[in-house]
Each structure stands twice: as structure tokens, then as C-alpha cells.
Length: 405
Image 1 (cartoon, rainbow, N blue to C red):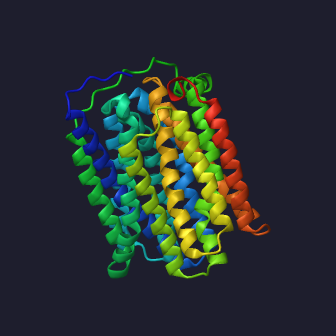
Image 2 (image 1 turned 60 degrees about the vertical axis):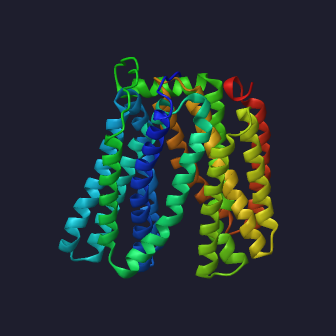
Image 3 (image 1 turned 120 degrees about the horizontal axis):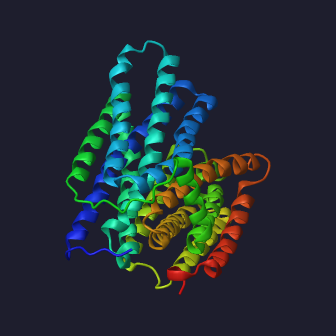
């Protein structure tokens, strides 16, 4: 995947592109936190909270692969702007009609519908965003700039909960929706000013289903892409016990206080930001597979350490390292897929990646969440850490081509 761009111009374009996506992500994350907190406080209902979780992930899972096909067929810049506009549009409509909704159940139903449409937009946008990055960044700099992008996104995710809490405390849910609309307008404006070439269109096929089939066959036939996607699916699934169930673990072992839960979230996001900075400055080992295996092994070791730790301060230290390893693994897998995928199929590859995340995460939550009610969560964390270390070994010996020469 060759790209010839004037010196330094590509750097400015890449940073502007990352900034545009972080601006829209900031608004989206504020709304995501605000809705979950609002529903939790207003209903205290596990069913409603579960319904919003499903509507936030299931549509994205169903649409991601289709979004990847569109990213290969159509101008990606226009597709990203269209998805952002769809999300902002449904949010604006919700903001305008909220004063007209008179019952709590009707408001919850409307918020549920809005979350579904927003998830659809994210499923369309995400593959296109990942497919654009190799068009902006020369291949030899992909790892570093994926790390920079990860840092910027982690900072946004670090700040969004605090901003959402302040806005909800001092104002209303409608104010958070307004913030999302405004950030979408700014992000779209920045992206509109970035020159982005149109990619070579994929070969015409009879239908979207046929195009999807080509993407699946390509992912299966290209060994580095196939192996990276398999490792990614295992990684997301096995990250659930120590990562996504951290709040449950802390409440059971150290105490059910908001300070503990907040500290875990902040330290985790800080570790992720540090991991992005590390990858941005260092760029990883010359062998991609060694970087991937090292990140997975570190991830597994810290999962085990968190499971056996009995000091909360020590647990937070391990959580910070866990965040570093998480970003490192995500960055190197993203880079491998960008480097190894053909330009005509890269959108579908990232569509598959998005579908894997949107399926493996909730499956892991269901399986490990249910297990945690009958088996000590510490044991589950240790077992997942061991499995992650085994995955690291498999990843090192399975990757070939540019990732493992």
C-alpha cells in the first residue's frame, strides 16, 4: 500500500483527522455515560440497563460488516461525515422532542430508539475510520500514529465521564445531547477541510451479500489477517474478567464505594493513554508478532497479578499496567490489519473486526458474569490470564509476512 505525499503535510492531515474523530467521540462518550447513569438512577431496573446495553452493541455488531463493505465501495470521507451526521441528527431530534414527552416510559423508549440509531451510525463509521488511516499515514509510520490516535482517544475517554457528571449535576440530560450535536458539527467541519483521495473502488459485484462474501473469503485466505482477527477475538473475550468486570471485582474484594470504582476507571484510562504514548514514541519491535505477543503476555501477567492482589494500591498499579498492555495490543493488531490488508478489502476487514468486538464483548460478559456468581472472580481472572499468555505464544508463532519476518 504505497502513498506519496509531500513531507510533513501527511502528518498535519493525520493529526487533524485524529482530532476530528476525537471531537465527535468526546460528545458521543458524554451522551453514552449520561444515558446509562440517567436510566440507572431513574429506574433502578436491571432490565432497562440491560436493554440499553443491548441497543448500544447489537446494532453495531449487525451493521459493522456492512459498513466495511460500504467503506470499500464508497468515498470514505463522505461515509464518515454521513455517519456522524446521522448520529447528530437523531440526537438533535431527541433534544427537540424531549419537552413534548410527558411520561417516563415514553422517554425511556425514545432514548432506547436513539441509542439504537447511534449504534448503527457507529457501525458504519468505525470501519471507514480505520480504513482511512493507511491513506493518510505512510506504512512505516502506522504503528506510531496508531499509538498517537489511541492516546488521543484515551484522553477523551478519561475526560468524558467527568464532564458528563458535571453537566448532569448542574444541568439536564438535554444539555448533554446538545454537547454531542455541537461536537459533531465541529468534528464534521474539521474533517471537511482535510483533503483525502478517493480509494480505488473494489470490483463490482452483484450484491452487497456477494461483496460481504468476498471480504470473508479474503480474511480467511490471507493468513496474517486471519490470525490477527482470531487473536483479537480471543483477546476481547479473555479481557472481560480482569477488565470489564473490574467494578464487580473491586466491590467484592475492596469495598463497594464510589471512590474505589472511580479510581479504577481513572487509572485504567490513564494506563491506556500511557500505552498510546509508548507506542507513539517507540513504535514497537521491528517484528510485529513480537510486539503483539509481548503485549498479550503482559496483559495475561497483570490479569493474574490483579486476581491474587490483596492491596488496593497494588491493584491500581497493576490496573495501570493492564491499560498500557491493552492499548499496545489493540494498536499492534490494528496496524497489522492496515499493513496486510489489500486496499480494496480493508474496509471489510475492519468491519469484521468491529463485529468481533461487538459480539465477543457481550458474550464474554454473559459467560464470565454468570460464572462469577458461582466461582470466585479471582479464579476466573487468573484462568483468563493464563489463557492470554497461551494466546501470546500462539500469536508469536502464527504471524508471518510483514508482521513476523
